[in-house]
Image (cartoon, rainbow, N blue to C red; front, side, top):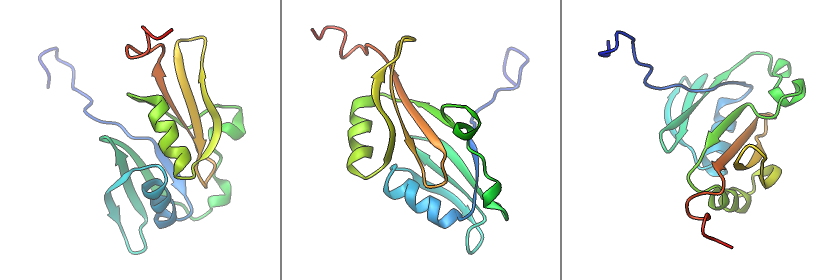
Length: 139
């Protein structure tokens, strides 16, 4: 336990039910730049993919037609990531063929963000506090 008497949470991961762990893992690796940390089963039933130490979990479900990403329920994203360089990440993912939901936009709440949709319909948002320190002095 920590000195404050509270147990520390050391890591978290969004959990995405999917129909095919191998296929979605390949997409996250090849298009979104994630690396496989762990995979279980043959074919895989469960896997953890991460980028920059930030994980996502995928679990095969028997009825993928029941999967309902947040966007279908009126939400914006299924997961949101704060990033160090939103413009560079957008360029990278667009170059690799990611399906862009919306282009980088500065939001009234002080974030520059964009979003992509994966083959299962999950929407991943990426954003950076804006203006970033690198852009504060720009005209």
